[in-house]
Length: 465
Image 1 (spheres, one colour):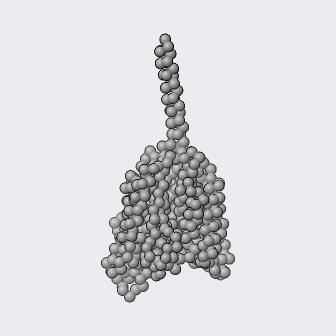
Image 2 (spheres, one colour; image 1 turned 135 degrees about the horizontal axis):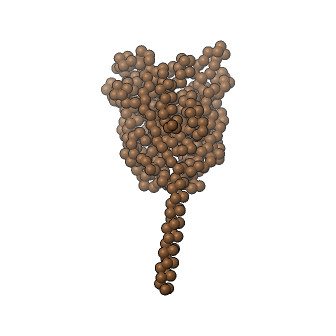
Image 3 (cartoon, helix red, strand yellow; image 1 turned 30 degrees about the vertical axis):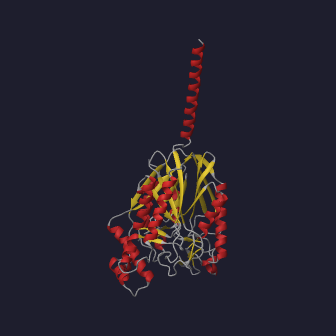
């Protein structure tokens, strides 16, 4: 009889324990315990003597602060999604494919689910595989970038991702926060006294009385932060703000500039939480109104951006991470319509030894993009949907208008737009900017781009009916 009671008692205890385990599992499952995050970072600082921004005449003379690639891998029921932000000016064409393929292999996912973006600092490299091969053929080895250095960076990022995948952390919630940024961003677009429009308020225009006095113009004043939580512990923060990340450049001092400096300060203040910063759609947004290209301005911009990050974090509200979806739209944009962008004219410049070095490099970059169009390789617009928030990666220097359009498409949600994905298009003006005759030698796309890109945005952002 005693034995039977003990057996019944033990059976009851086992049943209770199993029930508790099931309850805990159900709670964890409901709070997103199916999701894990791995964070990683790698040094991608260019060597002394390397060219910056693809065409700057003054090459790297000193390293003011290091360049980094920082990102995360989010795993769940579907294949992993990776986001990596690189302290480089641009990654284009074959080099962009190399980055995504390398990271996809290390993370165990596919190329389309790897979101690579540059922050677009100008004291940093532009990498375009086919362009450099074209330059090699005319005796201009390493003039755009050093392929051997690039290969080492790919090895470092692959090792960093692989190592990170061995130490993942559960994600139960995401946090959403934003803050108004004071006295950083201003539109390139200003209206002159005679009523004509110019897009010539560049990054260091604050020393010009007219540009400093002109209104901010069309910008997105908010810095947005998405935080990944394990319970109540923040694991990683992703910050995004739409502004060209330059205070001064072209003097030979390699730097991640005020955006990288603010990110590092945020990392020091929150050592247990991995910090990532990405540039929003900011082809037509600079710090020009508030920056006079002095070291003091760089310090001021760093402090203002850091303060916005802290305020955004302070405003963060947690919501459970219950499901994620990934969507990707493919499309093509028209090439620049001008005669000088025709292949035969570009080849003349490339092979002209009397032409300026920067012009020959630009010609090679243009031909590289034409080769891409010849092989019919489309652009992509990937979107990671976290339920309460969406992360959308735009190509090139998309104008801030696209970021504002994305928010209007999902007014019920928290849309984070990132710029400078595949960078071959260069500037991507809105229709309004095209109509106002915006032009620049860093624009490779033509009229009609807005309609095409807007359709792709609708495909990845609007909920399925």
